[in-house]
Length: 552
Image 1 (cartoon, one colour):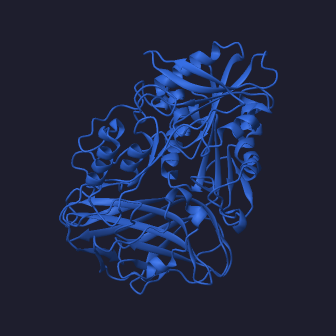
Image 2 (image 1 turned 180 degrees about the vertical axis):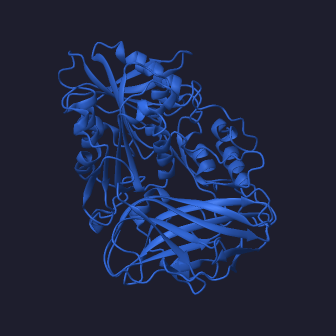
Image 3 (image 1 turned 135 degrees about the vertical axis):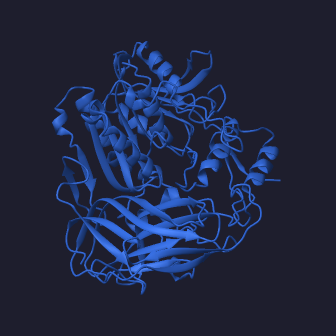
């Protein structure tokens, strides 16, 4: 029998008045309405729609609402459909466009509303902002999504004949059965020493006594219900966006994909403001003092964090909602140079003036700009499903809470390591990191993980960029172009850059069986021999965006 912890709705805040908002199909969604002292006056509203309990301890919504009310905002915090106190089925992503639109309709009809609404929130309650924007509702004047993306949680889907794709996160299939399995949250993890994940989910569902329609929409026979029934948000009426991305957010690739899409839509890009911080998904900072790096924050610690979290959005709303100031007062790009306390302002991302420097991997383990043009050669390593390369952090969403040293992972025989010489002076990196490689395997499916590390003089290593790709029909060589994401980072003098190459990152990513069997269902396994080309025009090459300094 599967074990789990069930979390039900917390008591509603004394600061709020409960409301039940009727959707177009008659379903009632629960909301907490927070009104400032001048509640008889109509004013601006901040809407927050989330699946994590509008009254619960995890998201601190009552404290956030109190902070927003002190700035004169009315706040509506709503449990999304099927979660906690809201009625309806908990169907992941599917109902948020229409439910967001109906909620906006309700707000503008209230006597305390002046008809102007903005939205704020992280992760899924960043996604609900994009969903509401996709409705084109005229009352929605601006959004401030943080650490999220329009493709949040979407499973990897291959096009017919496609050989190269992304690698599936384990959280893709775990999230629905934990967070969208009825009204409550079910904190649960599989036994990672086993590989029969699908069977373990079925054990959980049997123990709970009901199925999760959110899990069933994706596995084992996906039905592909549309999350944006009216079309992509960027096809809707454009509105101002304050878009916050974390350098160490595991969901950052989804955010950057939206940035690239926005650049294709002039109406959206005209008032798109990018804010990039040295945070992970849960908001932990790179340079946090050790005594403040705690998993369970006290109320005083949360209150101390609110200005950092909310003030940028409030300044943004002051301009775009209240008309106080000019859009020129909000920088197009505000970013932290990670590893420092220095924040910079740019007109565009990446910054003007970067140059792309290519580092080539060498058979002796070097990584250099002046590598000799040797004839191509192959090196190989084993992928053993019974002995997988471990993920560096226990919780990828709180990477900076753990701040793991990744150097020991490079001591494994199934991890290839390439390292530069020590840098003579500081080097600032800012922009996209990419790598090209030719790979093959003696197994049918090959995963390739690339991790870029900053190695300190004491030998410890911090991951600063990463990317991964999956190859099918892998017995035939494949040429990879791997996106390792965006970086804004200072590599200090005396440090070295290192690249790890491996075929697993477990349990963050679902591991390959080596036989081609469905890795989520498990089955027969086999050890594969993986091969990587070095030297020549197809050898492993890393391309770094250098803003200042010299890597040669």
